[in-house]
Image 1: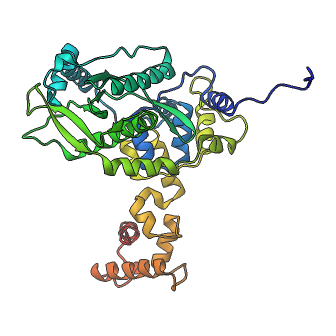
Image 2: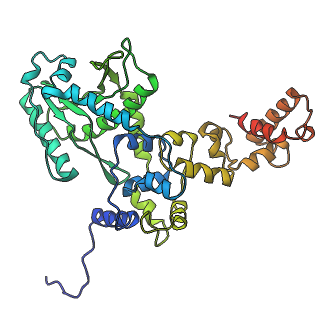
Image 3: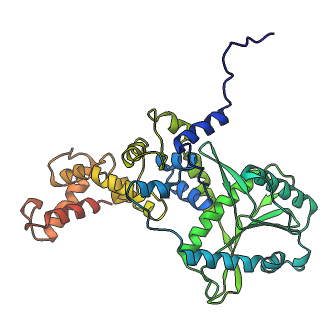
Amino acid sequence: MSTSLDSGPLPQAPATALRQRLAELRGPSAAPHPLDARALAALAANPGCKRRALLDGAGVDKAALARALGSPATFGQSQFAFMRGNAFEARVKADGGTELLRLLGVADPHGAVVPDLTAAGPEGRAARTALALREATGAGAWTLLDHPMLALEVAGSPAYLEPDAVVVHPDGRWTVVEIKSFPMVDGSADASKVGAAARQAAVYVLALERVAALTKDASVDHSVLLVCPKDFSNLPTASAVDVRKQLSVTRRQLARLTRVEEIASALPDGVCFDVESCSSGELASAVESVPSTYAPECLSACELAFHCRERARTAGAVESLGRAVRGELGGLTGVAEVLSAARGEWGDPADPTVAALRRAARLRAEALGAGALGTQAPGTAAREDAVAGRGTA
């Protein structure tokens, strides 16, 4: 069967078309910003936010975008902490990782294999890591993979993740190693920091399970090894952290993410997030074209949180009060709506949410001795309105 030369171009493969579309959104002059495990854990914590899913999937530098919008992020690791963390990790992995292997209980750390994972690009390194894991499992010996590269599909877009280390046991178990510079005092560390490390490690475990599923006799340990400085010294100590709960939550939340191509297909023509070629007005319009799901927790996890918070406040959205309040308010989506319902000016009294708001407003008015919200002293109405809105959570 012959093929006509003027029949038009062959259709692009879906993956190629998606990469081209994401490059257009990112801008011709912008290199893709890598999606690391910390960002992926934050994305999984708010799977309903299409804005973050699209920007992370397209590799947009959200910190640069936030600066261009006039709402720069104020969180991040200090340069001193970054250098201290690198120095501590270098100490733990010195001499072929003998100290790290001792913490794992390896009798002869010097006999462990440390394969070379060098390859071209993240795809090449991920393929080389998968091959090294299979070879190590088949060899049945202790193997230390220093900064392996793992691949994980997120909302239809590939993400490449780089844990501090992965150790292959002689029995075929794979253990993720997380090296942190916060101290472990008397065998315990700050609970919030351990929790963040566990959520990050759960992403690595999830990516490793994809490789283990294709490897004979391999299994991924659901307890990761957390290595920290002992007490207030620079000596390393370790503790096993069970991440099964975090793994279950991460797996479920990532499965809920809308695929990136679906979000991109709904955007208006000409949308671009290139901070070099677009004005602040154009960037603001582009960002607003993608639906977001803001919550106060975003302030510690997303570079665009301050921009989204300002927009949520301007729109009077109840999301700005937190997920718990949003869940309690049911179909009421605006703060003005909530306050009107609490005052008895709007809403169906048979609605349980409206009834609860009015009951809460009456109780607060009685407690303050005002008798009714409308007879309060000047200047207190706004404060009590806010209390009435929060009190239903």
